[in-house]
Image 1 (cartoon, rainbow, N blue to C red):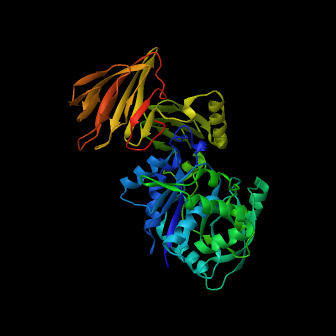
Image 2: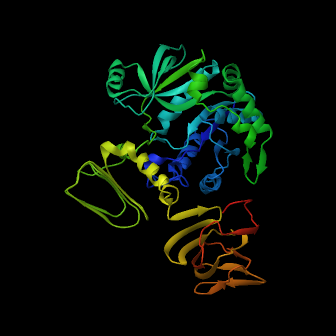
Image 3: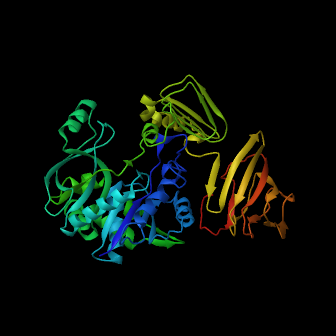
Length: 475
């Protein structure tokens, strides 16, 4: 009996702006420890008894981020599946279940979000064991988190009768949408309601059978998307037309609220959070004697009950209370803790104005490394470029800009027209406008250089690729 984690890695994480952005959302951030939420999720699943290599489902845009973060912790997934468009969780899990059945027709799948925090591994493992017992009886199991406060940001599950042979397993009496405050307080007082965590465990074949009953078009679309999918480097690209034809729906709506086999494990002591807001991150962060959670270069004087995070410079506060302050290289958020659920409205405004701060950080990650904007003006911009050991950029040219490259650390192999150069620290070269060129790192340490661009147009779309290791059609 195989246990295969299905990790859902998409999402934009707009409620944790400015740290989380659509090109680098919260699952790839180290918000609670030294590793990202995705890395923590993969390690958590790998530590379970009998767990196999996970199936990660993510997007085309996030594929290299996901692959690099798994490589960095020495974890090899059985598949990294690329969704061509968002269709909510039910079709994504259908794809994962179909792939799991190819590995083992009797496989159990553990569905996990990539952006949740679970502080206590032993309690999590015990909950999974309990769910495995229920799955062996052909239940479709969801994980309910024992409610400790009257939260209005979570859906709820009302427990039915206890299931024989399970420590904390119950039939599901009903699923409830996110309630208002008064209703949430009533649920908490009742004691029979759990928060809906969005984690599931069931036989892959059982999920597919129920999907066949309730959403046959969805299952047919998922099956065709997998069957017609294409291997691309380390990724499985689902067939775009087939997957786009699938109805969009969540697991709860598509299956769990309709099946007669729904069960819930009441999970206590996990230290679970979906980190759905800056306040929820503050709730699981350590605090000082003034109930402040301070991260980075922060001086907080006469300040209380605040979450303050400095990423690039000193942040000093004086006489503030109940605030969230988050500083990044190009944006600063200052919000009252009571208003942080509305951070997404800031992101909506940025998008409406066409501002890049909704999408990109100043440092932009690529499969070969990263680049960071340092300065810009009329007809010029300056970047810091880091190329990973053994990596290379595409063989390319630009119509509207020339480039100067100065090596500050490591060794660069540079194709510059018909010439090939090997440059080391403090050496430089000039790439004229319209010249075919390539930058490579042949060494065993990161290559760092400063790039000065000059020309009439400096947009990232002024690029023509002739060869590319990563099969990209964009940059």
